[in-house]
Amino acid sequence: MGERSGPVRTCIGCRTPAAAGDLLRVVLQQGSVLPDPEHRLPGRGAYLHPEGDCIETALRRRAFARALRGQVGTVPDAATLRAAYAKSPP
Image (cartoon, rainbow, N blue to C red; front, side):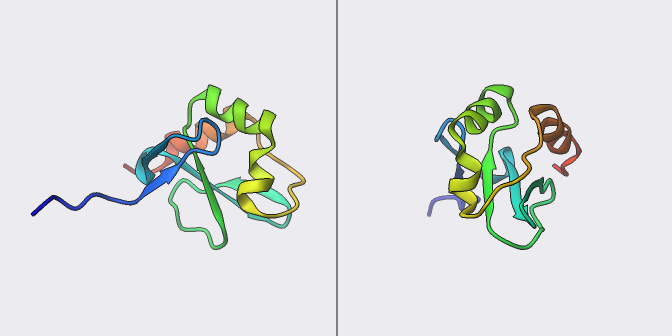
């Protein structure tokens, strides 16, 4: 039988599927997009590659509001999201 693979999610920036562990999860809480490096915060999440291109594309396309299905007031910049990914456990 085949090996079991982990969950696959689609990056909201480049729209490419990837393993959930390779992507940064963000959630919407009280109108603010928050990085969720441990993938444990409650609520609807969206995933994106931690590279600047995907983050910038998601910001430009306003993909956070669409993916999180909510009113987005504050979105962290690319550097903040990359730093959160760097802190995430392996």
